[in-house]
Image (cartoon, rainbow, N blue to C red; front, side, top):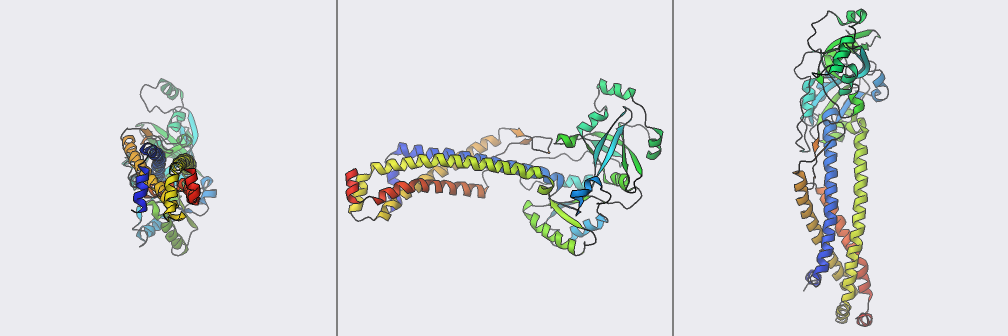
Amino acid sequence: MNVLQLAWRNLLRNRRRTWASALTMAVGMAGVLLFGGYQRAVQYGLETAFVRKLGHLQVQHRDYLQYGSGNPAAYGIRDYRRIQREIESDPELKDMLAAVTPTLTLGAIAGHYASGTSRTVLAQGSEPEGQNRLLRWDARGLRQAAKPMALTGSDANAAVLGGGVAKTLGLCLSDGDRACAAAAAEGEGLPPDLAALTGPARAADGKRIELLTATAAGAPNVARLRVLGVERQGAREWDDVYVGLHLSQAQRLLYGEGEPMATAILLQLKSSGQIEAARRRLQQLFQAGLSAQPLAAHDFAALQPLYERIVDMFGAIFGFMAALIASVTLFTTGNTMNMAVMERTREIGALRSIGLRRGGVQRLFLCEGALLGVIGGLGGLLLSLGLAWLINRAGLSWLPPGVVDPSPILIRVWGETPLLASCMGGLMAVALLSSWWPSRRAARWNIVDALRQA
């Protein structure tokens, strides 16, 4: 009879104690797997939200992150259409790319002179078709539907506002808002000097705002924009300054009749695992055919530090939780194996008397601990899969940073091979470690000591 069969029979001697230990392991492993699966789902949800908004990589002027936000005219990308075409047609990059679109970010002053209000804003010029392609990315399989941009299909003078901007400007975007209507009635019209900059007057079809900025040459420039509605942002500080408009309109505001530029070219890849390969290829292009301008490629994690902070926080919590459960499992299993050794001193003496070496005694108890770990691990896996199935269908939701619509709470256990392998490997290590000291003590007994203990 081999060691594995003996170990299995020995575990069945005291079934209540064996199943109690295995249940402790199973519950502990299920807890670790469920939290690990939730951590994975949160990470994938954040990644999807940021990749849909920022892309995987952004091609910018090398110094834009440091100085460009205050002077986008000086740190824009010239001839950005040619750069976009070269990136899209590159033999190595074209198979990785899912979407490529330019954007232009500029500071401005938004005014609603009908209510006598104004405030500083951050205008985001983009192409709705490209942004809608970004919103379709779902490589993680979360199946989170995204609404198309509100600017889709609108004219060049259309704009959308963040909720905080709309409130500050006193726009009557909802019927029955008496305070807003009163403010609009008391406000004055657009001053003549600013009205002259906007060109011929147009019919007042819907709510309008005036967006004032300075061109690259330093001259004031104003655009009168028709507000389509409110597009709430995930972060309040961004919601209070956001104005979305068409890229062509933003370029006219900032560059006037001069050469239009973009502050960033967003690159969305088919998979996040391609970021480093795409970055290396872009660096080669920047040193060869695109060397006329100082360009750099930044990934979404560098552009949005909140992503790594949240992921690191959940990783630290997961590590602490895993260590705590491993400690409880270690002492519980160690106590079980100690009791097994104390109850079988006569058996150990008999085995030693018929010639079984110390290594054989130790292997016997280590095999029992390993079997106990396998039983507990498989039980924990089945328990976690069942609980994850129930939670995923419970309809619970949460609100990721940078997202307005709630996302469903998911537990990603099945298919997460690294998570399953690390948890199962950790449980087996704990089971063997908890069996090592009792098995070593049993192996060190000689025949006389074993019979005396019996």
